[in-house]
Image 1 (tube, rainbow, N blue to C red):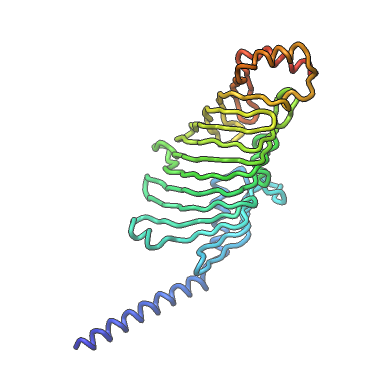
Image 2 (tube, one colour; image 1 turned 30 degrees about the vertical axis):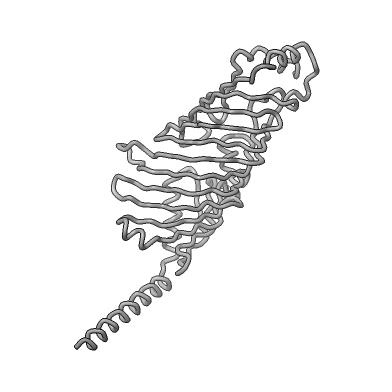
Length: 312
């Protein structure tokens, strides 16, 4: 009797394995690639209606998961010049974790702008929304033309960091919660308003801690190291769907270096500025639309204006 039970159990387990394997193979062979590809394009276009989205190919790999290739977002009528381009996006379900936690979890890895973004997505279901976390490694900001286009200035550098996004976009909820630490190395940002004749800000590295909820984003522990100056800053951003329309309010101080004054003669105005700044750092406040903010130097404003007049 016991042998029969063992045989039955073994046979049942064998049929289960065979059935599961057959199902996986059928799903792989019958996977509706074109339908999924079109659905992704439509979903992206609904989420970002001001852009035209194209997805090159979709494939299902038994070991890697769902692989999406050549995702590109561009202005309508300018599909040959993508503003955002993702080389590959791989999604792999975490089956055991999902069953234990009773929510859908999957890992992702994205090839973006010569770098990578990888992490975890958790779908909490209902009004709880979702949780997204990840690590960014050496993403080239220059390779994402959307940034320069929206901000109307040169944006270069290699970005890395970690982030976590939690919440729901439902109107009755408190919005998305963001926590992030970002570093950018070997960067360059165009200046709409020249600083003592400098139309660009080159920097060896910059870093900032971000946290916020809804439309309010706080900036803390900001640092910039440049050949022109070293700076510390903090503040906040009121986020807009169009990044260029986001409202910026940042305060900080900078320690000027000799290259900042390159092109200026050693005039009375420059000597007065150096004397007054000798025991202090130069305070500043930047506010207004992110695409074209204003900058103020508090009690040093008149001295800076006098120096700028000498450059004309």
